[in-house]
Length: 251
Length: 228
Image 1 (spheres, one colour):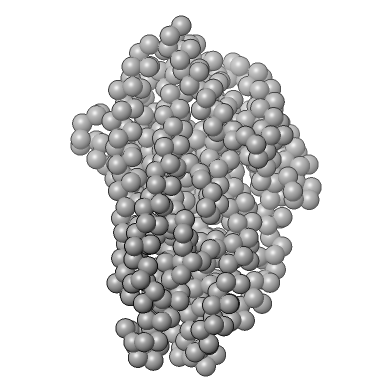
Image 2 (image 1 turned 180 degrees about the horizontal axis):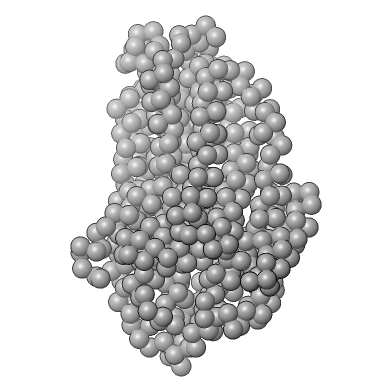
């Protein structure tokens, strides 16, 4: 790494900006403007400083189209900042930038959206089902989720800044590669325990019909699982609830 | 309840939680479990907030915020649901059902409003393309600040508008509600849990052994219920 050291204040500024990386998300440049926004504090360290030719051309380059998972984009922000400060050739940086999109999207989606988030959600539902109080349930969900969330963003930024254009090795981390199936297994077990217990907490006066509700849930869940990808259950539920409310009001 | 003094804090909460969904900081304070509880807590009913929050969370398990996909906006929607359910602390038989329906519709409209905001962001980015391509710090930061502010306003306006319409509608529907409380609650809970069961299956089915873990977990859950 031949570029300047990045001061702690600049790292903090980049991290805080990462929390708003999707602020200008749109269907044309996707995360692009957000990447430029987050890299910008580091670009002030380029020769000529803020507003100099190197700064302006780097900021322009970094604000173009980009797509990635928002948390994993921290890796890109760190690596791209390091590449700019190391004085890598612009064409090389652009190729590297393009190559980062795919892996950072798929790793993040599998690890966070399809893994950590539903796992924390069912853990909180399990706590609710076990009768934990309001504060406890929120603590389980927000505490668990954000421990992973902030750690991932911080690790990503640090890995990117440390490895620069060699950041691909960091993406081979066993945690990133091997944890999604383990998280899914944990979510399956906890989710299985949570569903009947949470249902029991919510059902209130409907407890008299508990057996029928359980049978309906088993059937409904099975049908929705079979129709996976073709039907969105929550939209079907809206339709059925509208009919039920009309029936309850006009009969 | 419908006076401005009570509506304003809820609209502000809806704005902040609507912002969390995508723009800032995505800490999942916008998930229904948290958002509905926060809204009901503002009205002095945290327990009822948690109850409707858990119900909405079961629906939300199915809709995960993958990149450019279109998904419901749960932050401001759960504020609507939590507030509606907290307004009726008595045992109105259809209170949960109607509040959940209002929240689901608000989530649907909220998802649509996010798409419109993304289109607006795109139009603005296109109009400022030259400045961005010349490396203008002011424009890059300006686009980001505009998007964040617009999202905050979107969530607040959506919450206020929905509550202004839903509160009287909710009261009217509950005053004419004629279905047995047991059936009323059973229907909404069965729908929520069905969606959650399908969603958990969808998330875990590809992992080795997960289907047996899920079935085993359900068995443990039912056994625990039997011992209560």
